[in-house]
Length: 118
Image (tube, rainbow, N blue to C red; front, side):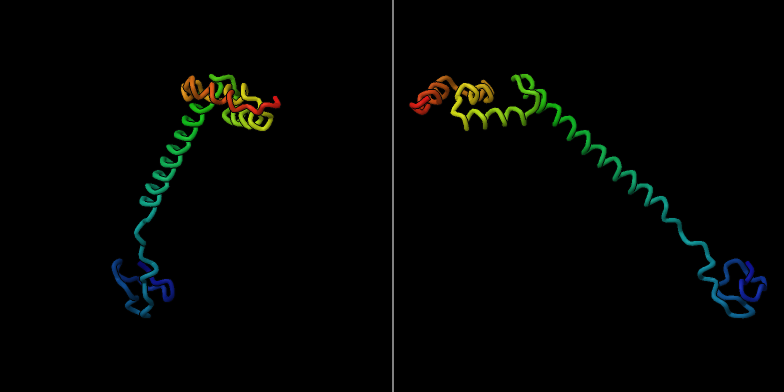
């Protein structure tokens, strides 16, 4: 190894130049931190990909449930329910609620409490 200040040759494992005393610490090769960074980056990518896949699969399941009951999206079902409540259209309210959530006696009660002016 050569000293960058005086140009004299020194031992490869020397910490200082034997001729001028310049430290060689900055000239020693540092340990590579690339491998841990690559592993951390790969782990982050895998976690983000898993989260995206879970969100997409759960979102498509909700949409298919809403579309199976006549609505394009869950938002459409919610808007129709609000419209039915706002306009006292109880048929629309009952239509937006999933049939397995309504018992027959509850459905009769919904119609029983309709305002008399309709």
